[in-house]
Image 1 (cartoon, rainbow, N blue to C red):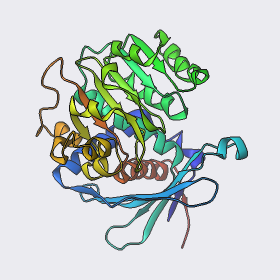
Image 2 (image 1 turned 30 degrees about the vertical axis):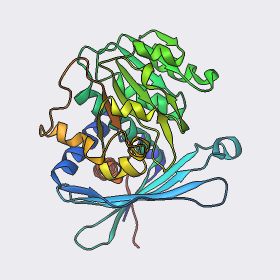
Image 3 (image 1 turned 120 degrees about the vertical axis):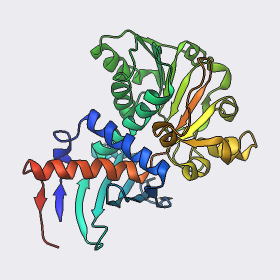
Length: 321
């Protein structure tokens, strides 16, 4: 078995490589060449933690495995480590033997940012100039850095429940040479692209905060009950997702469906746009919506790429089990 420690990930996986891996696996999912297993996600009754498993099998890439981990909300304050903790395990699909154990914290951040940027590449208007950020925590920085590489944005605007955190994304904008403006939620009407990345359990962004032609990538809802946006917004948009089954059960679409505003048939896989079997955006004033629930295959794709690089560079640690 190969081990790739968390400390080595930053030197191996780039934003570009994560984007390519996620885009390819989304395409494979849409053709049926890759599929995810049902998600297990539970409150464990200790340390206020949510813990779970996401896994799947990519026939095309011969990648089988799972990611184990979750969210420990007190980690940063109590232990000085990030709240999200995860590890990816890869298995040989021919024998079932474990192939690799890979640190999953940075990989999770990179693959989540890659997913929203895949949607920006394929669904946002090519003339998009203003990007809006709802959320300004640790993950928001990854989301913004990657997004800025896929359109010629000229301005970043942001809102956060705790405004004192907005310098996190202002710093990213400044590094990219772009102006940043803190706005109220109705100021998001200026945005051509909006990324939401919060852990909210109540809608924050309302339908009337959005202008025609906007593309939204909602990345924070991955559990029953979580919610970032007004369900009415989904009824006004063309809705895409990574995995339809997850979108309607643990993603943002769960609320719009439960209220009868949309049906399962109204939610499309982003991979079908990548493959060209769905037209995606069809007009300049169309609102497009990506419900990024986070699928196990994303984790497996980036982890498999990292293991190959780590072995090639002599960084991976081989152990007998």
